[in-house]
Length: 71
Image (tube, rainbow, N blue to C red; front, side, top):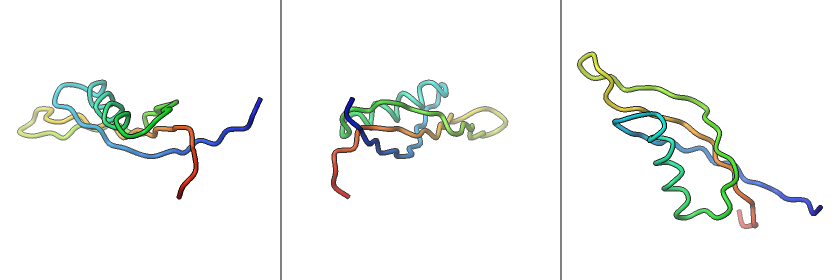
C-alpha cells in the first residue's frame, strides 16, 4: 500500500435549524473547492441565543482531505 498524506483544515458552519444542518453547510461549501474529502470531525458545538431562544447553531469541524502538494 502506498503512503498518503492528508491535510486538515478547520471550518465553522452555521444554521438557524440544527447542528446537523450547520455541519452539512460547512461540508457542502468545502466540497465545492476541495477534492477527496475523507473525514469530518466535530470539534465544538455552540448556540447563539437571542431573547432567551436559540438563534444560530454553530459547529466547528475539522476536515481532512488527501494532500496533493503546494503550500
